[in-house]
Length: 244
Image 1 (cartoon, helix red, strand yellow):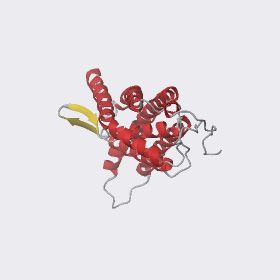
Image 2 (tube, helix red, strand yellow):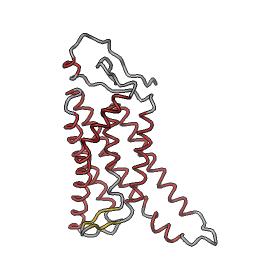
Image 3 (tube, one colour):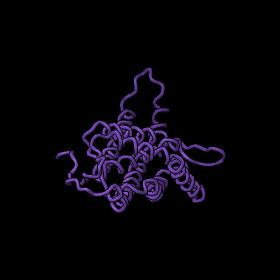
Image 4 (tube, helix red, strand yellow):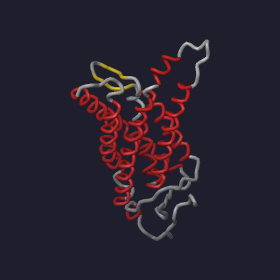
């Protein structure tokens, strides 16, 4: 399958008309695999951190709270620059990374410990629950990122290059809500949450934090997207090509 975007012959359309045309880059350059690798790394590390319950200033969250929003920022870049097919591929690949990580952790725990190794119990206690956290993360990530990507691409196809910031914020609200609800519902018992009141706090804090981080960093996300568009060789600079 060719990674080159489907091309449409250029027309003498004005710059204003080109602003209404949705254009996407191909995935054949060095930028896409680099962003994909970063998404996978952030996702795996955030799952490890999420196995620890954290309480800050009386508020309950988990140890991966500061890292996971980066996965959505990277997801926004992929969706906006490379389109739906590339986003779906990145999400599925990251899903596989997470599944491979939990399989690796469980294998490490199951291997017989050497006679001189004294950290088996601590290792099992730390990484043992990770498979449940990863299941929560995988399902939440899949639902949240797919909805996030669909909304971004759908809005871009309707409005072209205009309204980038609104696309990012609107898609993030839906994606983060689905992601956080699914994740919290599965992960809460694992980290010791056993009452609805604490669960509700866990969900609200998680959602507000993730969305808040994206809102705060949305200007940075916009700048990064514009830079990727500028330096990505396959991103149409004149509105003459559209990726499927």
